[in-house]
Length: 497
Image (tube, rainbow, N blue to C red):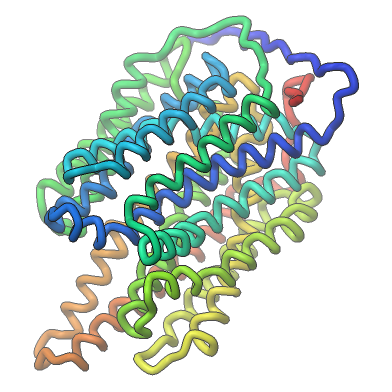
């Protein structure tokens, strides 16, 4: 394998009288951008039925509104991360914000399904630029262990709770304004992020720029598109359809070719040293597996509270607020204090087991359960577990990595989360459909049996999600190293103003 020297990175000197508070203002800007990207995955889902009625498109078109975003975002993340390393993280951060805002405006003004799908794909493309730039800027801005632990705790809490925020915001905007505002709202986030980024973010100057790894880019994009597309077809077409297993198999083969290329080229898109480190590899695996488990919570608990408990869209969003609050409180207290001292191994293991316990609690839900007695305790338990997982995982994903690789390391974490969500969508939806069909077999279909079949499918998903959280705990216990995370390997941290 050909090796080259790391490029020299020149830290930007702070202005006279520089105060450390600049870093924390930078965190506010980066967390705001992360919230916009994360909540957009769920805020639009709540609005889809209304948008479908307004624009008059089919159920298959509704799926492509979701899939179009996922395909562009998941397939372009590695390229977006490497561009951040080679062109500049702040520059790509601002480009991502502006592009995401313009794509959101296009979607909000959509006069048909084609325009809406195109806008969602553009959102995904610019999100693939924005997300790794934000996380890599955070990684190189906070290098002192205690401060880094606090910063990643806050950032992790935003990432973990963003989906619930999206459900609430989507319900409020759809019910009291318009489904179009579920897209227009991103303009407000973007304007605030651009102004804050220009004022509070700074970046390192890259003295040497490597050539882009075009064979790696092509195979990574094709492999991830094929994999995400195949998994996206599983719910509608089933696992026996060539559109499902054919694309999944092709994606796996192309990604294997991608790995071979990355071992041989001089300037790989994804240097294998990034993923082969135990802590970083454990972080990527943990994020992917936890993402599958979280999908089971957000989607199928939403189905339960709307179809069984009769909640409105706003009530459904409000139902997740206690979990959101628990994630934030746990991440910013226990996560911030314990991760710098003990590292991710005990935190992720404990958090995943707590999340599994919350999912098992969900299997008690019945047709006559209540929110306060049955749903709320489970949400608080799961929120506590998520608060222990997200902060140390995001910290570990970029810990000990050279600044020159910070963007692609961040992108790899986002890719793991995206692929985990896509796998969760396919697997858990398939399991739910099979469970409901099996329950109804030989029974007279009426309102009672259909409701019980739906409930059985939700229980199946919650059990499966609990199993994935247990798997996440095993990864945490066996893959992560013991002890605190490695310090920043580059001598000078990036400074903010």
